[in-house]
Length: 476
Image (cartoon, rainbow, N blue to C red; front, side, top):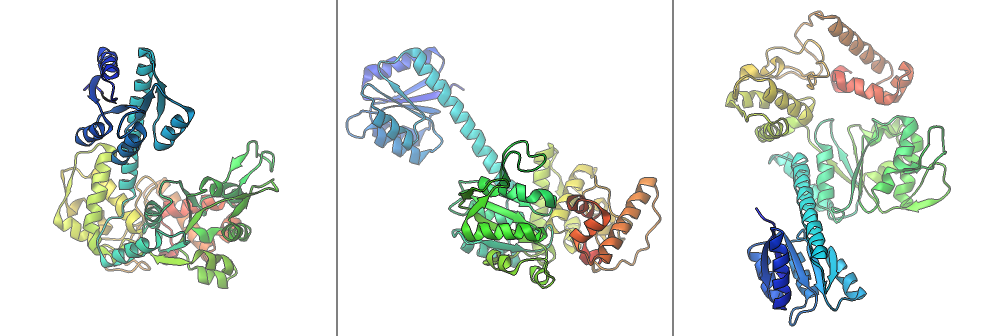
């Protein structure tokens, strides 16, 4: 289909000249003799680009531009005039015009501008589609009473600049809630910066959060802008905030109090305007009692606490979540759509998802890829989901499924015997898991102390915990 260019100009000779230039280059031309006529055409049948005269009787070009931007913000508009001034050009740019051409114009100048406008249109369309895809990826799915309470709290908190603390088990969707708050806030057009405080080694987290100057420490070969600076005018999401070291906690507290940061190796402070959303799966009040978390920082972060419920408290959402994850998997992996048998859905609803939504998502993805037929039946579900047995060992990293208890059982015990590992790899994994659990118990499940005892970075230990599905509520 030919790109369609709308020319709005009160001079018929100019419209005819542009028609010849554009049609010769295989563009579709449409013209309008006034601002209101052009606005009506944009509403009725949107073009791919607009060329707009800045000086017209009645509704002038700047007024017309403002109306067009209200109708379609992404529609590229180039201004054209024989009476152009710097002031006109600046005002047109502020209103959203991407180019400004003066009469008399050459065909080359017009065609370069049209090509640039159509490329801009394509980029904006691609950006919009990517944004919609991202929003779909981070969509909160469900209609349960427990989820509605969360969304009501989000609706009240989002329009403000107040700091929010998201509380809940691992895998319940705290990141999705944080992104929903940002998306519905006055900062929605600015950046959302996520920091996983547990995944960054302790010796690097200050540099990640606050940045550093070149040469400030060994290995600092380039200046680095910290996450707080990157989030200026936007939102920063501090995930697993309970795993920050006391030194980092003190610096984060200063940012919240003073709204300024200081890069490592620099004496200069930088003002930042950042909204903070924090999240944790720990009981921070208990951590305060143990001296592991600053009480003053807790009060700064806990302005608006929102408890995100585990999946077992919103089982009625599971059919919708299964449908959502099935469609996402089909789209992402280019798979033929599959349906779930009602009995399979019932089994998925009965199962106690200790890994919460993350575990359910991984299970659905595996079923969509591995189940042989177009209909996923109960027989296709993992044995533990069917309630036949507990898993004998943690799954391999490729499986992506956390170990789970049989239906109706709590997470603490399992009645099924554990068969011996069948391969050398299985033996190694089982032995490593048992060793890690023992060390965690010895250190009262303090991750930092355990990592120090094992002489391994915290980030590596966290990866092992995720790999083997080790959780205090399961293995404690």
